[in-house]
Length: 487
Image (cartoon, rainbow, N blue to C red; front, side, top):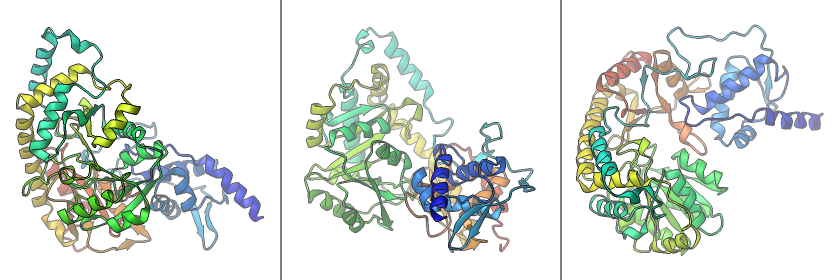
């Protein structure tokens, strides 16, 4: 009997191969919930069928166990599943079950598969709608295209144009304290491409440690390249170096100047501990992702970890997607000298993935002083939105702690208690209540590689919203969450 039941669960696992989209605004747990709900409604999963455990399904889908647990909890609460003690989850009889909808609530994905836009979306992605310097960019584009330099239409250097690499070198030294030669810089179309290239420079398939929670796009790249990726817990100072040592990893991916999504800044003492770990062995490297160091609103910018490295162990990666626009698709690596030699040995034959024309436009944008002026302007724009958010969120402080408030383009609201509502994480209740009033907020849990936050925490990004939209969005959240009502 047990063997038949295990075989049934095994077969069902393949029916539950769900194409999850982590770029979709629908949380992962909700995507899983919708898929299983629809399978149950259609009868593809018959009543009485035992479902895989949350652990097995999480491993099968490549998500955290808490994600599948939330999906199962929702299905159980709505009567689609039955939880039997010591036995697991079983499909319930679904005839007569109806879906409760609020008239104001809009699902992110409609029945036709079309994405529904929330009127007020606190996404942590993107840039200010009026932020792209289109006038200057068009001017420089015309200058480049009407020039006599026909060489721009031929193949360029695989590492990127020398002029752009020199401009980036000079900017990084003055703004971030990064010390390197232009020859150490590698230009590519997006950080994902550069991480894939980096993997080919490193012998074997080394184990990679990542902060938990972390930037999941990098995690997906590493897993797609068949690296074993281990989550390492964080404390108030950032990634635990003791946990890093225990992991056995030889590479670690960190965001020390402004960790995403927590917003933590790694202090100097922890940075020195991290560098000491790397210097213990010649094959250890730190991948420093400095994705949005330009936007800091309190005190001076934090120098890059790479500038403190005396042992040639830090791989520095940066991008212009956040500071200029995602659409230009230009990122860069600063390789240690040891890896630069491996690049020339193993990867020199790859053609550059960024057009020479776009590289020339960006070079002129930096060299002409436009980039620095653009950053100064955008710091002012984002600081205004940031300070407005902090002012509007003051009434929330009796219930939430505000975190990540000194840099970047998002804030965190962390519940002061670990209260649960009818077995569901309070975090998901907050998201649902916000959705009912047309506001989209984001779950911190979705960024965990393993486990979940101890307290309900939501992300509120503000880069893409106008100040009027921020005001109305926060006002709706205040009413939806009962702020000030004693709820």
